[in-house]
Image (tube, rainbow, N blue to C red):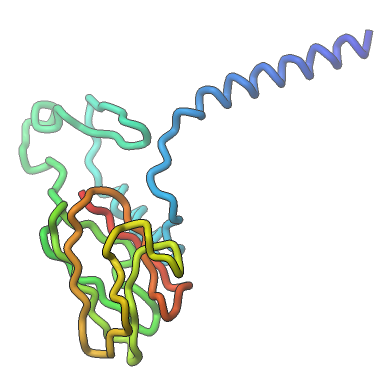
Length: 173
């Protein structure tokens, strides 16, 4: 009798686990690279700054608010579009901001204020193949900048080729 109850419990746990797996299986992987620990606070601030809405559409893990103006009666609460020009500063502590947004076709200036050379490049290290052309190819001296135009949408993980543990993310919208 005890074996029968035990087997039934195991069977039910397996069934619930299988159903849970199927429900979570369709989750979208937003990007392959993790958000840098220093950027997690910035990402949380960006998410908490988003206004609430009564009507949403879900696309993977991304929520959109198509009726925001209708729901709130104000165009002022619409999501801000990404800027066309962004500056990411590299210091002795790493990238600032560690997570940045730019519009598709927009320009990101990577300014070096670290006291040493840096070489921004797409992940993975050392191949730099996740975003075609995004590689400074050589060290950029302190006080100078590397400018790159992001033509394709998506999350772009990057690092300093000379200090590959220093990572960041550009969200091309």
